[in-house]
Structure formats: C-alpha cells, structure tokens
Length: 68
Image 1: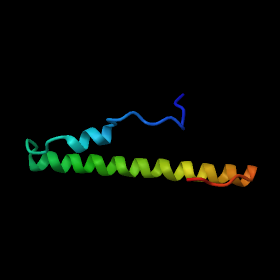
Image 2: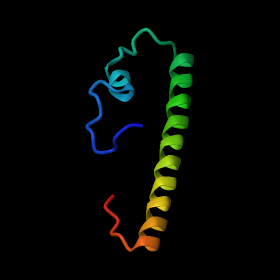
Image 3: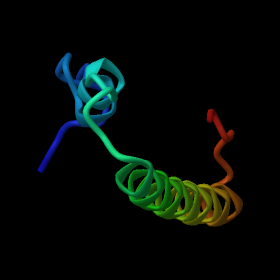
Image 4: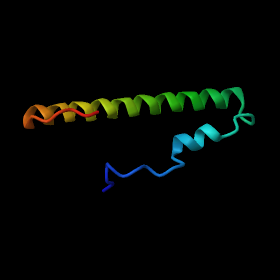
C-alpha cells in the first residue's frame, strides 16, 4: 500500500504526456487522444469527489477537521 504522505515520483504519466511531441499525430489521432484525456479527467474528478465524500463522512463521524 502506498503511503499518502510520501512524495509522488517525478515523471508521472501526466508529466510524460505533456512532454510528448504532438507533431506526428493526425487530426483523427489527436481527436482520439482528446477523448481519452477527457475520459481520464472525468475519472479522476469522480475519484476525487468520492474521496472528499468519504473524508467528510469520516470527519462527521470522528469529529476531525477536513484538510483537503
């Protein structure tokens, strides 16, 4: 299990994607890439929202302060 207080390794997937040369991609490939990235953004937002709800429920139960 990953420790939440440990720093994330540098060079994560998003950082590598940002460095990729987009020149070789066709219009269709770029459209597919955009669709995949938008789906990933929605997945990450959903996970973030579920984690926030879980944290809020725990804080309500145990009286903790939410810390983002």
